Length: 459
Image (cartoon, rainbow, N blue to C red):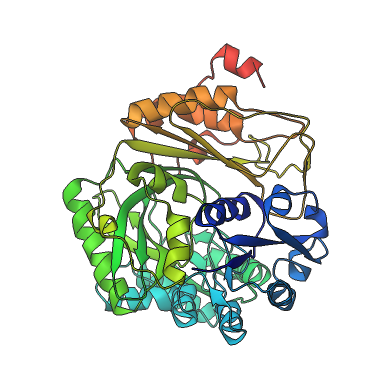
């Protein structure tokens, strides 16, 4: 086992990795920008190194600074968390050449899955169904030809990344010139590559993903699915496991397909295979994320397994435990992403947290790195906490989430807590009747379901 791990990330995921390391008896090194000097991951790590100014290009994306921090502190491995450099094959290669273990899959696999167009073609070749699509688009003329072949509407996607950036819907030929240029510019700004491609657009899909974990001895398993359909601007907002749309037979059939395909490409460590589900409940490959996911806690809650500790054990050469091959999903778990954003407009809201009460009680977990009087900086992702609730069934999980949201007080900045309360009280959500356009139906005023007066007054 490693003696010391550097965490190349910030916020709640950095703190989550520190917790796992402490339980494994591993010393930790935090890296931080000047804006994060008072952050909790800096406080609770055994050592901390400042790697640059607030801008991510000069700090959390600065490979040279991170590798130098690992070498100075004699770290043996690097955990990238999610986002930042977690799916950067060059970073994984630099770690290897610097004799540092990258806690994740191989650079070749990251590169294969990181090119969304290439990944879609490879998964289809190996047997996973995929939506009709194009290759990387080279010109407006080619885009028009491909859109006609696929059939309108189509969606433009960035080949080098995801998270909703660079995604636009095209419903007619006249929209192609402007939308194509806009998507390419967004992709270039977000991922350093303007490459985009078309995919057939499903108007009312659900978003289902399968969690996998593989060791370096050829053993790979799936840990069931997560429902990630409640989204805003193609970014996940509420996740749950299991999905109400997946029965035991489908779970085992699709899970076995995923395991077979990923075994063929030699996948190791944690990963997630994402699908879109159409109205006939057919699943189509969307993309693969070669890292731990933001929403991994819901899988931990229904399986009882610690995914982050297992990532570290696999990177250290250990085999998957036998019990991971006999996974059972127990109860139901829901996660609400608490973001520092206006709940009506989704505009990010930086500032100082002046008051904080974190909910607790049976079945409630809060992953966070915020505290009273801490500053939420404007430079990074708006996620400040994740509220996860587990119950014996979905109804109990929803009721627990409702009371936990009522007891979650976060003052000084705007957050999405009021929106999450509306979602949990919405009759369509409670009945499982929703798709990825769920929030769009109520824009711009938010969801129409009323929040109880006592809850609303507490905000």
